[in-house]
Amino acid sequence: MPDCITTDRISKTFGGVRAVREISLHVGEGEIYGFLGLNGAGKTTTIRMLLGMIRPTSGEAYLYGQKASPKNHDLWNRVGYLVEIPYSYPDLTVRENLEMIRRLRSISDPRCVDSIIERLRLGEYADRPARNLSLGNAQRLGLAKALIHNPEMLILDEPANGLDPEGIVEVREMLRELAAEKGVTIFISSHILGEISKFASRIGIIHEGRLLREVDTDKLESQMRRRLLLSTRDNPKAIPVLNRAGFAASALEGDLVAIDDGKAVMNPENIASLLVNAGCPPVMLRVDEEDLESYFLRVIGSSGGTRQ
Image 1 (cartoon, rainbow, N blue to C red):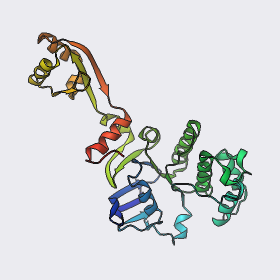
Image 2: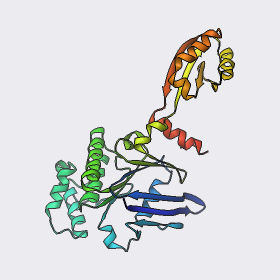
Image 3: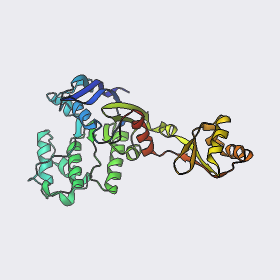
Image 4: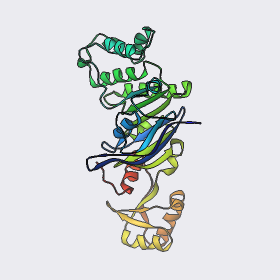
């Protein structure tokens, strides 16, 4: 599968602040790549470099093997994008905004405007000035602009911002369909791992400008931390018992003991027997499984960075 998006150690510095630090990405044709990070992590700056909106301080960004540049008009005919706030002509209606985009993109068929209005469920607002749209509908208009020319690639910065739960599901299913049925390559940023993991094929986690980790979503569950949590009538006695038996046990807040050990997680009954025989039987014993949010926060925390 050929790479449609490639970056070679791109970095960006604003004044004395390094917003992006030597990021190398490879995104294949038809792939949905989720670019995940907290606000201020460097997602939007990276996307703006991919689109040629700003120049990298160092490194290069390529789309379809061509250097990202605003002058490369043939390249942008293949790409649809949504970056930060979906700016519109505020005094023009939704339909007029899309008609403007149709003409700017030299699309000959005027029916594409009605088609994209229907697709993004903007019919009720078609004749409403853009300035009077809610944030969610302004976001839908931005997505309509990105999709009106049926691009081969979509680069979307937080496209779910302002959408209600139903709208988020609609956009998710639409993007999944575009990738699966039409081979559209999708690069999408977000700060919500749980949502992105539902349809992305691969995820990259960025924090404080650094790409910390990439993982295929079908392997994400295997990277979740599982541990055994327990409590006894005498935890200070129980912990040395567990340690001597080869289990790395540690005290937690709330009168809990944690064991990060695969054998303990798979066979909690053995831990219970060990503690009973040592005279400190457990009063609580359960397997604790890390959720997606906790996994994300653990990854960015292990980098030495701070949560923002």
